[in-house]
Image (cartoon, rainbow, N blue to C red; front, side):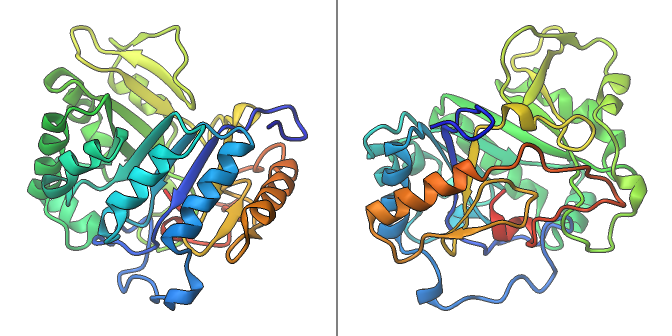
Amino acid sequence: MKDSYGREINYLRVSVTDLCNLRCRYCMPEEGVCKKRHEDMMSEDEMILAVTAAASLGIRKVRITGGEPLVKKNILSICERSAAAEGIREVCLTTNGILLPQLARPLRRAGVRRLNISLDTLQPDKYAYLTRWGHLEEALAGLEAALSAGFEKIKINVVLIGGFNEDEIRPLAELTMQYPVDVRFIELMPMYDSGDFDEQAFIPDRKVLEALPELKSLDRNGGTARLFHLPGARGDIGLIRPVSDHFCSSCSRLRLTADGRLKPCLHAPEEYSIRGMDLEGMCQVMEMAIRSKPRWHGILSSENRSRAGRNMNQIGG
């Protein structure tokens, strides 16, 4: 289905929970989020009904997100049923990797084809600071488990934070030399106002190009990312620029929050509830949400913050 600006909407990001086993400083408060009542959240059957409705409108790719999706007790069933929905060609999942040693192989058997693993630093003390109580060795063990499980593609997501991991651009990029993975550097988005990062934290992706002058540009579609390659690497480098050079003109996404609200645009306040609806009702609201998708999200900067109205963990990363 196309929106009012002619963009083909074929990608649904489904947040299965707003809870997480980490407390990353750019994502959520230290105390976490107030746990909602069971009846205020989408049930598994409602999530699958939503995926089915989306597929009937032309959605072909589903990404399972959170919070941290692997803390969801029925995550394997959600993934398996999503992958089996008629019309869905690909199910992917984004995770911090902590629980992958136990779940990587079951996820692959459940039909998850691709994984994105969040990893913003390779220094144990900085990882503990950023996540508030995480341990780097657990995340790296998760990466190893994912590699051994045989996913079709593994991407490592690195949020660029000036004054925090700017000095680690090269070692993080060189993970593509060590492993058959892609590393994607993502500009920090001005969403959750934790006070931990000042305006100097919002740095453009050109810092990656400056740190890695030997990068070779690749002339192929990287979705939201500009693709590059380090000579001799086993994977690619992607640069994602939601702040300095937005990709709104080619956005193909619709988001569904864990409490059953559709967001046509990550950074816009508009939301449309589908919780409690039947298939027909969901389809009607999805059509309305797609048609209301804005042309772009407006200027984002440390002074012009996102109008999303929620923290990232409450929307779906």
